[in-house]
Image (cartoon, rainbow, N blue to C red; front, side):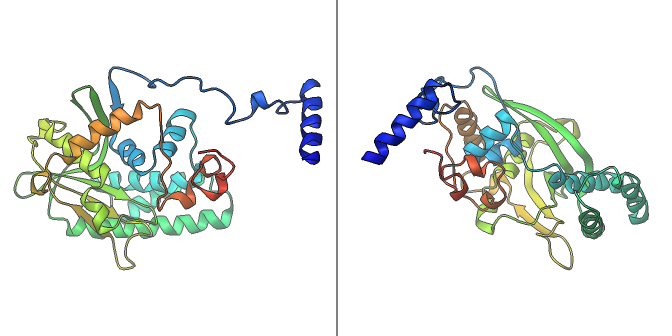
Length: 294
């Protein structure tokens, strides 16, 4: 008790002197909420990837969307290059053409050190090789790459971009999302993968009606990064919405997520992406953010 009184007296002295952070009125968890209402009203805009991030962890989505918390830029360089390479392949470029184009821009990318840049360059070649092999064996008709979408369901506007839009032999639409990371969803999680589900919903709502596509025939994650196999890409397929026991799950999820995005409460959820989370030191459920009051 004596120590606590002495500490309180010292804090009072520092606060009186105007030392920043000494006054309890400035301490986190003792300050008042700035507001308890929703972040916005009226129309809500979401993207397939945003829905996926929000379902994974609402708090991370908020801090990334509201204050720009994100992983270092180097983490996204390789993915951007590979998606551009895939677009070149769709235009008819072969592996030599793609490698040449990558070499032209590689020196402009900052990977932090020469050895890591060289490692990533080798990884890029491996991913391109996996992608080329997958595309060669893909029987569907490619209709568009990097295609924008925008549809509405009630007060929710779904907008975004698909990596590849393809037509299956039965005339249905299949959206393909290229993945260049080191992790992949489990088979159980894939059945209701939020991002793929929203892509299928967008097809059903008429996002690609100009191609004559209104029936989703499923969606795929094509793993060409470290999550892919040593011998080639790993394809993870989500069944068509019409084949699901609950065909309306994707639309219900979008409405639920859109309502939750308005706040005011955002839940931190432990998940398999916590290890690389850029907001871990602000998270009450992560040991690195243990000082944060839930």
